[in-house]
Length: 512
Image (cartoon, rainbow, N blue to C red):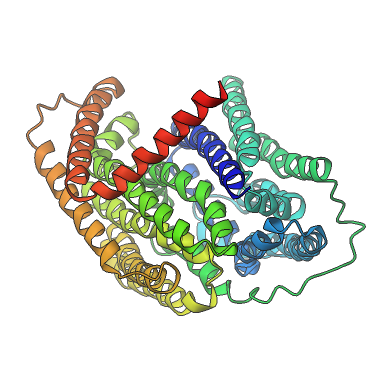
């Protein structure tokens, strides 16, 4: 029976990984295609305005107070025990909470419409800016009002593949519609309105699926549950929101919309890598939560150690390759754009380093939050937030983009150290050296790859095809270095992966 449950968990994890991978690739494509169209058709300032408004609207999620991850963590146990009454109570409480946020969001939009134009009035008129704010806000409102609770439920049920399939459909639809609208010479308002309406389909479809599949009707549900940790997630959530939006906010206030556009273009590259990396945490966090809820300590440690090595291998290959290739890519991506100087090599390197550090902490933050340790790690979240704001503000005037990138690095480094120590000591109950030696290996691998790629016979980056040739060479070197060094220093974990794969193959043969 226990083996059957583990097989079911593994099958769901595979579905989640596969659909998440497809989704992230499509999201990366969307992320590169749409901004390039906006820059090309409307200019860097309009792209900067869209990015800036989107980031300011994201601050409404501060009201969420970290409630979402807490809801997901408290759902694991009743789902594992098939306690439908408690599940419905948690979902009802969650739905009431998010509906209130949706209503407050309307007030926030009105407030933003009054305040925000003061920062950009020299560039664009009030009506142009305010109408864009209302249009961009449509999909965010719908997410809170219709879909957030059902999204959390599907994640806790280890069915993120349902969410991914819905998102895949909406992204593909948006890309097609944008190309069509551009042919007809539409303005930025109509373009964002159409994409916003398509994205409203996400929460609506999630809502319909959960209600039909699980016979859930929260309108008739009267029981509510006191979610004890609902305020303990506040610090974690504020840290995530502030760190995700500090750079754009600071640049909007103290620099120009053009620099916001430059930041957003570099961040497109880094965020694309982050989204692909997050596939692995998004697909396994519910599985780890399930193991913790069932007190499977030995199984958790074995599986986490294997996950740790695989994740670090993928992260090192992805981020080290990005470190080498980001500036050449921007040269090709922005060719023909002359209203801003997008070639900022130092900024690109600093931005990649900051997010590389973030990526290295992801396994530990994932398992920490899956275990529901919000209260235990909230001080570190406040420290991270304050460091990012203070350092960014101190450096932005003199150093601009590079200054806010340093703020990110400092904040990420401190928080990463905290998560590594906490996860090893309080959840996995093992020596921190298990992780430290793996991170040292990652640093050595990174330096080796950078050194070896300097000897490559690069072709010039005059086209995407030539950049792709360079990217293949860099990636191949990265893979060889990472695989060889892991075979030397992480043999046990790689043997564990081999055993798992052998079991999967044997099971399939038996089934046939």
